[in-house]
Length: 350
Ligand SMILES: *[C@@H]1O[C@H](CO)[C@@H](O)[C@H](O)[C@H]1NC(C)=O
Ligand SMILES: *[C@@H]1O[C@H](CO)[C@@H](O)[C@H](O)[C@H]1NC(C)=O
Ligand SMILES: *[C@@H]1O[C@H](CO)[C@@H](O)[C@H](O)[C@H]1NC(C)=O
Ligand SMILES: *[C@@H]1O[C@H](CO)[C@@H](O)[C@H](O)[C@H]1NC(C)=O
Ligand SMILES: *[C@@H]1O[C@H](CO)[C@@H](O)[C@H](O)[C@H]1NC(C)=O
Ligand SMILES: *[C@@H]1O[C@H](CO)[C@@H](O)[C@H](O)[C@H]1NC(C)=O
Ligand SMILES: *[C@@H]1O[C@H](CO)[C@@H](O)[C@H](O)[C@H]1NC(C)=O
Ligand SMILES: *[C@@H]1O[C@H](CO)[C@@H](O)[C@H](O)[C@H]1NC(C)=O
Ligand SMILES: *[C@@H]1O[C@H](CO)[C@@H](O)[C@H](O)[C@H]1NC(C)=O
Ligand SMILES: *[C@@H]1O[C@H](CO)[C@@H](O)[C@H](O)[C@H]1NC(C)=O
Ligand SMILES: *[C@@H]1O[C@H](CO)[C@@H](O)[C@H](O)[C@H]1NC(C)=O
Ligand SMILES: *[C@@H]1O[C@H](CO)[C@@H](O)[C@H](O)[C@H]1NC(C)=O
Image (cartoon, rainbow, N blue to C red; front, side, top):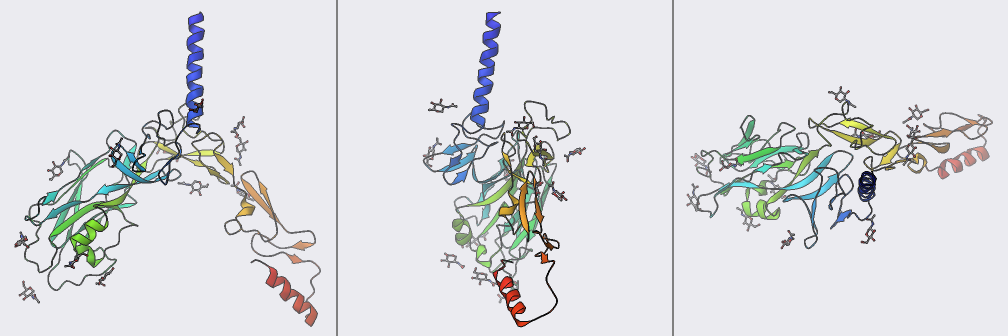
């Protein structure tokens, strides 16, 4: 009996310790300049399953395994990482062909289908995106140049640069160049072709990217790519609120089905902001402090999860839309009234 009690209290202690660490005490929440908010964490007990990261303090760089992380977005379930560029160069190069695959199998991360584009740069280049180890999904793109090609900055549309979308939910890819890819028969000084999966809002083609020393070295051989992540392996329907493993810990938070297939994400309910994965993390928004986002041209009052906006005594109108009008304002336009109206108008912040 004593043994039993001892075991139970130990377990309790363990649970309390884990909860305390998860909520932030003694957990490192910054690596270099990058914030590491829960459900991510560096130390054991400081993160949810699968969302542990490594901080190399010497370099001030954050990693998922050996993949460098440059941004963590808790509310949108995304992480931005660096992806090494694959290339295919003139055979006179020391390493003429390098394919750098990436494998996230077994992790909560997938390559974002909405944020990334498979991109290749080069002339007379064929680049393939092999999206699964069993080759059940592949795609690719072609870039053709001849000595009459007109290139356009900002347009990755098959002249010097090509792009295509990829399926969401993938956890593996390899980038390859079929043997027919040429650096032959063209008068362009582009001895290399490059391929990568990239955050499409980051990459914009420049004709100077066809110069390998310019593009590859300017970017340190890597480009930003977006990963989607999610919690668990079931959607909101099955992730029950009453389970101890339910990740949406905060009051006034809600569950979202993950867009990458399995699992779920948490969000703060309307009128609340903060971190839904932390107890008490979703805090009431004081809407009156953000008049650009929550307009009020009258008397603003914060409410739990909302706000009210009313006209002051003896005035009327729709204060959410425009300033309230005084009941007693007359339609006569004497010069003194006109100037006082102008004065009021000038002093209004709207
Ligand atoms: C945090 O670390 C300090 C010093 O290392 C220790 O005294 C304290 O008990 C720790 N707190 C928790 C909640 O682990
Ligand atoms: C951290 O980075 C430095 C510099 O790149 C490296 O020498 C060291 O091995 C890394 N530390 C760990 C623990 O990986
Ligand atoms: C362009 O290429 C064609 C066919 O390869 C060749 O006949 C022509 O001389 C080239 N023109 C220039 C300006 O290099
Ligand atoms: C594209 O922009 C680069 C500089 O960013 C410039 O050197 C190049 O001439 C431009 N190319 C075209 C076709 O406008
Ligand atoms: C990636 O592609 C290269 C080139 O085709 C191949 O040599 C390599 O084995 C592939 N890697 C994986 C993990 O499939
Ligand atoms: C590779 O580059 C060398 C030197 O510029 C050139 O002589 C050779 O023809 C190129 N090979 C191919 C396959 O383009
Ligand atoms: C490529 O870039 C390097 C370094 O910026 C420059 O020296 C070289 O002239 C460029 N080559 C071409 C063909 O534009
Ligand atoms: C999550 O997905 C399931 C199955 O597709 C659906 O029935 C459910 O309504 C979704 N829940 C939310 C909160 O979107
Ligand atoms: C806030 O209050 C307004 C007006 O009562 C209502 O229409 C709106 O749905 C409320 N918003 C939330 C998030 O409760
Ligand atoms: C999270 O909730 C806020 C407030 O209700 C909403 O504006 C936002 O679009 C939601 N985020 C996602 C990813 O659905
Ligand atoms: C969350 O709501 C419950 C029930 O209303 C309440 O007992 C608890 O104190 C709240 N927790 C926080 C952190 O506000
Ligand atoms: C916020 O959470 C508390 C406690 O769970 C609840 O009483 C309250 O109604 C919630 N507020 C809104 C606006 O949903």
